[in-house]
Amino acid sequence: MTGLTPSQTVGPYLHIGLEWQDGPFAVPEGTPGAFWITGTVYDGNGDPVTDALVETWQADPDGRFDHPDDPRGRSRT
Image 1 (tube, rainbow, N blue to C red):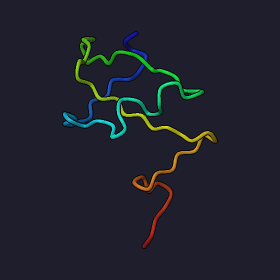
Image 2 (image 1 turned 90 degrees about the vertical axis):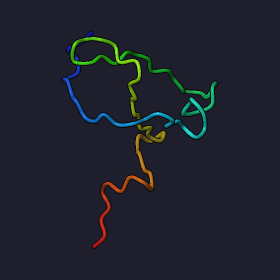
Image 3 (image 1 turned 180 degrees about the vertical axis):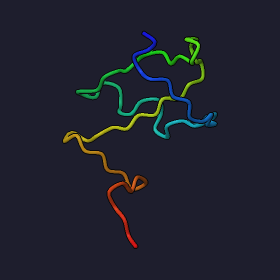
């Protein structure tokens, strides 16, 4: 499945010890509507990246994302 997403090299960023405060799940197991996303990250040579960090952002039920640490769309001068 390589080639579906264009190659992009940003970083490396250190993510050792970076864990979700509430555990490994974005919502508690068994939450209605919750689902799993699985996959493999490959490097430019097509080899699996064993320590990749995939960042996700979750919208609310209306499809909106609002977080106090993400000031997009707001500005103050």
